[in-house]
Amino acid sequence: EQDDDRKIAAFRALLGDARSAVAFSGAGISTGSGIPDFRSPGGLWTENRPIDFDAFVSSPDMRREAWRRKFTIDDATRGARPNAAHLAVARLVEQGRVAAVVTQNIDGLHAASGVPADRLIELHGNGTYATCLDCGLRHQLDDIRLAFEATGDPPACRGCNGMVKSATISFGQAMPVEAMERAYAAAEEADLFLVLGSSLVVYPAATLPVAAKRAGAQLVIANREPTDLDTYADLVLRGDLVELLRPYAGLA
Ligand code: NAD
Ligand code: ZN
Image 1: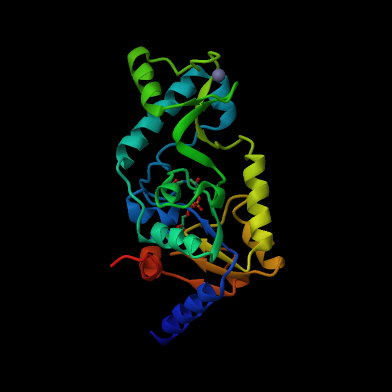
Image 2: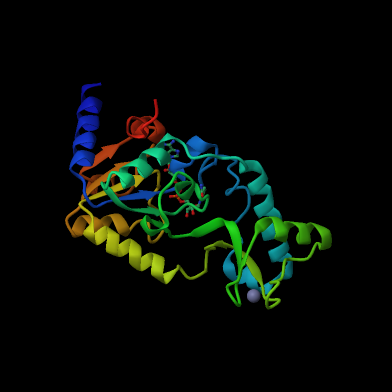
């Protein structure tokens, strides 16, 4: 109603003024593309306890299980395309309003929507390819899957025979240093920090919005459910991200 209209107008005004905004996304920006978020009942990520990094590295059985789950998730989400919320973010980047897109997602949909690599920070890596933990060599998932299904063994690096893992960050695995530094730098330079579909419960998700606001950014939290930082935000928008951002997506 009126309160909602006032909030939407305030949101539009903030975007209109933005010159160095950060768009910070979580799983909620991709539910509109058919990829379940972390908390949805029966969600692919919640059916099993996650396999942490130490378990992956120390146990061939766990590596096998991790790859089995990975291919199951990939099959269930194959063909997912960026939705209007991703497209809106890409357009705001193109317009020079959003300076950096920082995401916790591993689905690659921000890249697919056209955000250039130098504007995109994938804090938890990328699930669309794999890398060798020993030598860093990049591997295509199709190749790995063929070998895995043929032999039943967890894949080994074609270069050094080392351990190959999806290029995502598991629990217990070190966060990528360069990505973290870029994310904090962008947050500290931001005039506007937009949280888009994150429950803000895990580190560093919970600290980036605070760092941005301390350094002078306006903080907007757009999420279907309340978050612990809502009282700290300048504007809280509680609805569907696809609806909120569709007007900025440049679609007919
Ligand atoms: P989360 O699942 O903890 O929180 C997502 C939030 O988005 C929820 O609070 C939910 O209410 C909200 N939401 C869902 N759909 C929405 C919509 N259409 N509009 C507005 N809000 C919506 O996700 P998180 O905070 O990103 O953390 C989950 C972790 O799991 C992340 O670290 C991420 O790497 C991983 N994950 C990634 C993907 C992906 O790559 N698409 C999917 C699931 C989980
Ligand atoms: Zn290797």
